Structures are given as C-alpha cells and as structure tokens.
View 1 (cartoon, rainbow, N blue to C red):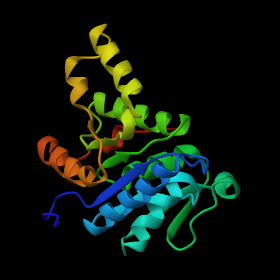
View 2: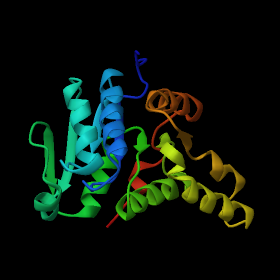
View 3: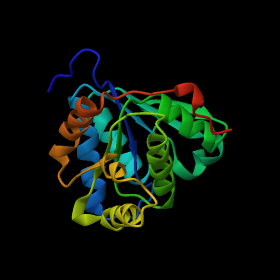
View 4: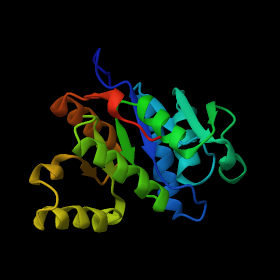
Length: 202
C-alpha cells in the first residue's frame, strides 16, 4: 500500500498496557503494528514495552517500521520502555499526550482501560471543538468499544452532543481494515490541525 505525497505519514496508537489482557488482543495488537509499518506510516505510541502497547510497537518494529515512543519518567519502571526503538522521556502525562498528538496525523484506538479512555475522550473533545481534523479509528474486536459508542450516541439523543459528532470516529472489526479506514477518513476530512496554537494542556 502506498501513501500519497501530503497524505497520512504517522499514526498514534492508543491501547492498554496490561500484560493480563486477552492473548488475542495482544496478538492482534502486534499484527496492527505490522500493518501500520508496512503501509509506510510512522508508529507513534506511549513508549511502554508491556501489554498491547508493547505488542503493537514490537509488531511495527519487526516489520521494519519507524517507531517513536513517548513516556513520562515516572512510568519507566511500570511500563518498561521498549529499548529497541526511539523513545523520548518527558516529565509529565500532559507533556506525553501533547507530544503524541503533535507527532501524529492520525489515531488508532485498540482495546484499553481507563488511561486509553481518558486519551480518546480528550482527543474527540478537541475534534468537537474544531481544534483538529485528524482521523480517529477504533479497532473494535468482539464489540469491545460498543458500550462507549452507545454512550456517545446517548449524548446525541439527549441533545448534549450534535448529530455530526457521530462522524468523529470510525470503527472496524478486523486488523486488515484499520489502515484503509485511517486513509479513507483522512481523505474525507482533509486531516490536519485547524488551530494548533489553541491546544494547551497546561
């Protein structure tokens, strides 16, 4: 798969860091990392070597991909950085999230816990505010993210979110569909940051 000039160059992957996750989630995370790398896209992630985070980064690295990890200093012992790839150590979660956002022009969300939820809700909130138009694609095996999607749609039904919020993300159920969905959404949205200077986490 080739990427057109001026198109998507990098994907930030959000996912869980627990080694206790379903082994199938771990294996598909590895496969998705490989798919991203083979598409010629830089793989940006939270820098850890554990759980789906580590599996997906290893998949990208083993496929000869460009990989960038970004991890706060205080999480190095817990999340065990993957030493075979470029890793930037920052001082806070705020700095980590901002740098991950800035270094990627699209996002893929794999199964994860409360940390992943926090990251994706913030990302969709920024999109809702018109701060960026970067693709957001969920990998949704076995309907993992369906309860979250139902909550999103509930806010729309209650007129607390506008109907167009439902177009803020796409969901796919297979490994092979992830990268094509990112590229299609980028083409539809004209991916990019609307006003990068207005995004601040401090």
